Image 1 (cartoon, helix red, strand yellow):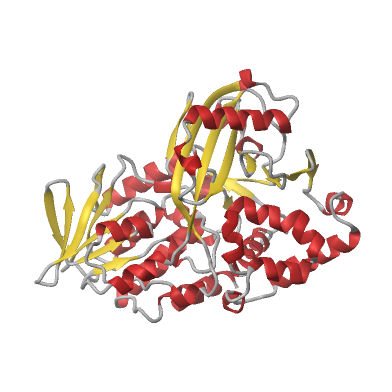
Image 2: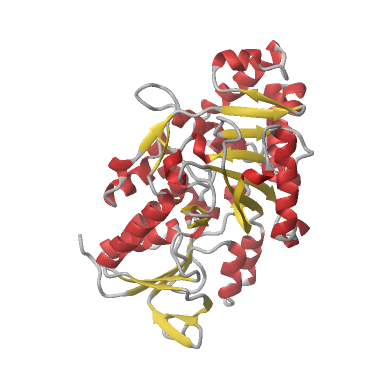
Length: 458
């Protein structure tokens, strides 16, 4: 229902958070302009050319239980095209590949004794029964896992996985991180068959984003692409000015969806107290290689790696989930490496990364041949994952800033999730709902998001 056409709004950032928020604001009757520095929409969910195909720049999957993205896909007219399948999982440990896709394989898993396996299962069960992660925010994830899983399971399984995703920051990350991961895994089983179902849209996110752009246009949203915002400042008249290039645009309300470092750079009027709050957000970055191969590496969608002598932290074989016809009969593999934003690895050339990563594949897969590589491309993102550090929600900056009309809402406000498209869309829905009635308050932002999350997922 159209309820507000008196104010001009701007959304800065054209990822799924910005796109969904812009769409919801427009449906509330607001006059909306969307600014995106890249020439295309999508942000982290954007696509690129890999040889002769177009697919996602980073690996994404939709779970059957991902109600927010599925609802959005239905609105875009795409949800009926979702293709669902079951996938297999493996662990690479002690220079061997171990399938871990069902109960019988878990019981035969050689790295853990039966007692270790029972404790591991009890840990997951314990995490699944916790309804609110707030009680875990003051406990280090390593301490919580050691308590429930025991020293051997923690050392052999949990710590390698945590270090692969969090690096040295795992010692400063709260137990809410593992809770969020387990909660998402359990939701994945909320299917009619009680089995984990993973899905994708034919054409990948490139198709979703193209359709999204059409819907934004139909709602009269002005999408200014390839227009990096240089500065956002409040005016003496209570408006907000956005400087893009040499031009200045004036709006009544502006929502910045960029990461904390970018938001602080383009919003120079933030107070020192606000800047200190945003500086407390710790990020983990990623180097992610996309490989188009003549042949598959395995039939596992995810291979978790506990060996520390490999240059990447997991193997994601998208073609174990997606029909190879989408890739012209070839295999698509992602090799992520999570690392801190100040890591010198970000300075490595594509050729250096390629050499190291291909050498790693030769160690893991005896049948792999370098001549099978049809395309190798590298993505670098320094500020990818906001880390749920100890007592995270207590220090989370509110969406409303001290500058009248300026709001900052980004992935840091996903207080109890794992950073995926579904939770990003959810954050946009919650934020837009609050803008429909009133401005998000400083005191209740994290609590409201957490409450909405709990209501949606039970």
